[in-house]
Image (cartoon, rainbow over all chains, first blue to last red; front, side):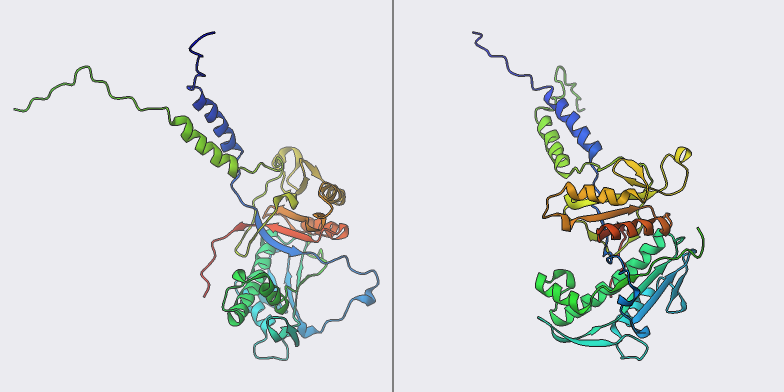
Length: 190
Length: 157
């Protein structure tokens, strides 16, 4: 038996590790998947009578045409104004006649609270660019998030994202995401 | 006068390289842990739009991806926006089958939590996106996520 059992040469270890390292360097994608989460509505009922009627004042109509122009409640809108308009619509702070009704609901942890019946109706053309659509969705999400933040600051003294599960569920009930997407039309061509 | 003595026979001491493998291993482990393998080879160009109100997609194993955009090889496939499922081009009709297969690949309990991530190029027209959404509605995959990049948020008042 050889006394000095020959050591494994360590010099190549670094090279092997380097090769592995380079492989993982190349294969790495650092980006975290993120995006705007939405829930699609179930398919429409076959019989049109089942669709509940909604009062005109409860609908906030947003139209986007094939040239990415906005029509908000019948008037030419601007993407930078959309958030404030949406917030005012949902909140209806001065109980205006043409803004949505509110319903008194009792929600656990919050007690009796006025919940807006407002629905945001978003309609786009088939020629609308995806970028514009996402921007609009983003403004709407921002409006809802800000309203939720305000309410949770008011009730719990914390930002919405920091609430416990029960609390955040209560806030979500008080300010629901009510975005309805109409079946798109092909007006502007493609 | 000061004398500058030339150091004779004294070599610069060699840097010890014995710790090099350890350093490399540390880097290696870092990248091994942070690596997520690509789900598919992209055949379409996807430049996600920017948005400020993004949520992170959790549980990547419960996400199925739909890519929509202009084909990368537009000389061959044209510039019309195409849908990519897994590693190949698909049409709107294939979406339902794709979702069914994705469901079958998951545990029974997880099937309801399946999210469809729409990775859509920002120059795509909404027409094709809408078609995909209608198909997803038909097949009952209601949870969707519009993949966006995080934009620097303007300060909140």
